[in-house]
Image (cartoon, rainbow, N blue to C red; front, top):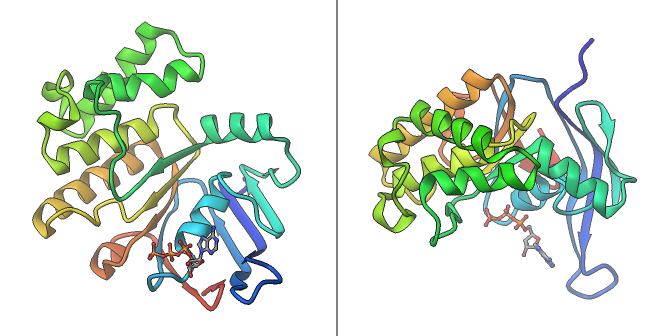
Length: 225
Ligand SMILES: Nc1ncnc2c1ncn2[C@@H]1O[C@H](COP(=O)(O)OP(=O)(O)OP(=O)(O)O)[C@@H](O)[C@H]1O
């Protein structure tokens, strides 16, 4: 049997422990995502969606519970190995694209590859291929400020996939776009994800988009149902 791309077991996260403001955000959250599976994560605002995504993507650590990527335990790793695993195994997409404004679209997709030790030529070829696949190849030399919101977000998708991660985590990837653009951009994202066969967890408030994924999980009272 192949290992899940992501496995979260009994994840607990408490903020401000011991203080009057203590808040138990995650209380035994479990989730397994198979390679190639696209899971919609639906949660009311403040339920702990970002906390969960940050823990799954090794940006934050749980107070207890296990995080596995591709069957490998991540919980006990030191900072350097966590950073390496995050860089090569996980791609992030945020609601606001967070592209580097002083670099062009293609440079934004090249840079994470250089940081991962890929040669400049190979990185440029891969970046151009990714941009072509979401229909913005001809705009690869533009800076983000010269692109529409939907185009910028498609560049952010390509950047997230630049290092061929095994897991994609997205936090409201189309949340700041108008409904029409959101639909086109979501279709581009699904195309990329299906094309590369990677596992994805995509947080969204949009139930119509959630219904187009393989499975929907809801974050409720610190657990996933
Ligand atoms: N570093 C922190 N210290 C204390 N409390 C925090 C911290 N980060 C988040 N929280 C609290 O934990 C809860 C969950 O936060 P989180 O950002 O995970 O929610 P969310 O579901 O992503 O919300 P939204 O959809 O509004 O972005 C919130 O009540 C938030 O105020």
